[in-house]
Length: 172
Image (cartoon, rainbow, N blue to C red; front, side, top):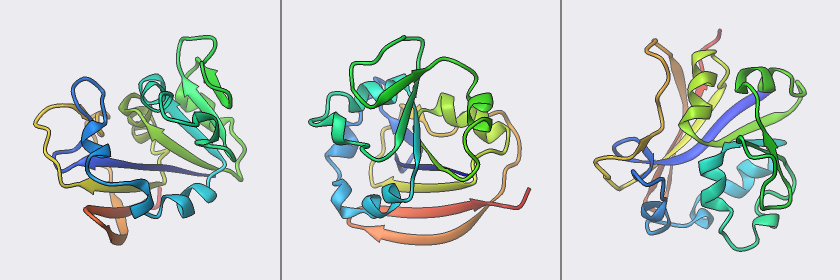
């Protein structure tokens, strides 16, 4: 199993603005300018938090957004308003540990999902696209406990206005 974070942040490290909106991202570029399709085809499972789900659920054709993956949303809600997304209410660490070992898992978003996985050395790869935007305040990507974590830079790519950094975790 490999656990991936794949997502875009601002130059100052934010996933979303202070109101959890992604307007800054939508105004900067499009998915078609990246290698998203190739990345998604290699994933088996997506995991996201409720705020990330709330941001994408209003997109057109959400039912076809992640058609080939099992999609889990960490939430206290017992049901979700979109077909193909399963609500989960348990510990993220225990949930990921029980997933099939031959699957690729994409952590779509949510620093409350990412932080405990980083704290437990469970994120194997980080593909971070950086948009040429400064927000000054917002929802940071990294909010894990203070601890030294080392990653190895595997690749750097440029897609339109985005810089993409591909990091792998140093051997455990």
